[in-house]
Length: 391
Image 1 (cartoon, rainbow, N blue to C red):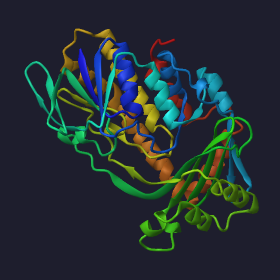
Image 2 (image 1 turned 90 degrees about the horizontal axis):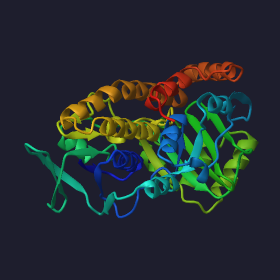
Image 3 (image 1 turned 120 degrees about the horizontal axis):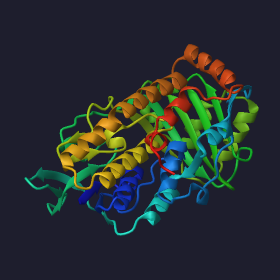
């Protein structure tokens, strides 16, 4: 079976890996000249880690699992502890903050005969009686049995397949960076929260940290906050945290003094996915179900997409393609809709509503003294990699 994948991000390369292992002939079109690295770092949770491990990719080669995340307010007072070591024991896995570029390279090394075509953008397609023909942005055609659109939140494949989903801004800006220094205890993440502000620091590996600073629009002095959001990140971040406690400010000053490049990202979302398949075109990753950063599940759900479609291809090699893709949609749609909703609620809670945030603080305290991470554990254990017999 011949498959064309549009996009060489985490979802696209994971899909190439899964379909290649299922015996498919795979080509990937990526409009950019190199692998995308937007975001700096990413956290891979047990659902994503187990799938990558199943395909022989080991995150321990590019990072270390977290034992806990310690949560404080901006004055430095402790609010709670997320016991990720208990989560790791529960799922025989781990929670891995890793550099996005290193994760992409790890997946790339796992590929065999897949052809990745850089500087080749997807334009349109036409279905035939026997398959589908894709056209790139130069008008050159390529036949396939089906197409997987994994080309991000502004997906051309999604638009061409008329699975409309317009991205919208949430009024939250993130600044992210990979810093060549540790700012947390070993295998421990740190979060500092206040109404509308968030600072997260995750150790990626020895001597490196992934940092994310987040602010909702209400913290900008200018009514049109884009002017300040697009200002030099160091200056903007310092101004946002000017009322933080001494310990938080000293950590920020040290991080902002580094030579690392900070990237500003305006957080976007799309309406809950209503479909992931149209004929011989399937969607995966952000093209299908872009998510906020609230649960840290965006990349992990793209990896799950790949696992499910790969399993369907390997177990039903002679199945009608259209029926197989509809089965993929059936297995994925309800799960990603629920996680999209939960992720958006969490993001809004952490950045906008003081009363809800206070309740979340209380929940953090309770969770830190229990053996369960509640809804997070339930969300993970419903992953297809745990509901199927996969070793």
